[in-house]
Length: 261
Ligand code: KIV
Ligand code: NA
Image (cartoon, rainbow, N blue to C red; front, side, top):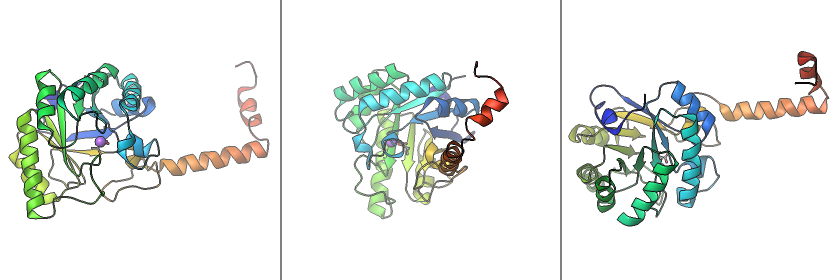
């Protein structure tokens, strides 16, 4: 059964919220089957699936394509769509962009930073918004942890409060000190979802490629629950060896015994 924004908000203080990113139909299908309540189609797709160096290369068309694929795989799961770089640069541009992602299959929209007028405008137009503070990759100059000084910590804390007041129903905290995430989580009414933000958030999100071990770099705060890149390498090696030795397709023809199917 699909979770609504209010169902997710009400999980705060009751049950940790699990969120995974997904970009493709078969991955989304398994995540839904596993009972994960919310999928984020993040603009990380640009880096982990498309090979760009930055999420700034992601377009609204890329996001529509991936949200559509994820929706077809996970028809009954709450899907958050990320607004790519500059598609949320002012309230009206953001509204047009958000409507495109909703039409592609998203249930809610996420955007980075304290764009309070944008968030308020989307919410006024009945669009559910997820905030994102701490490290905000679209504008960050590095991927280092932020919020380590007391002035930065105060700024992030103020941002989170402002994002909540603007109407967001949930906020992602990316790569901030664990103690700051703890303080912010207890001072917000809406759930916090952490990535590299420690154990005290209301939920946790991982980039699915990081969790799968699919890629050639994984952030230190992520965990590899599988080794998909190794599996792909092994499959490619095994197939090559069987084609070269002419074992394949003879070995499967023997199994099926016919060329009629
Ligand atoms: O794009 C994304 O996957 C994200 C998460 C890292 C929170 O924004
Ligand atoms: Na993102």
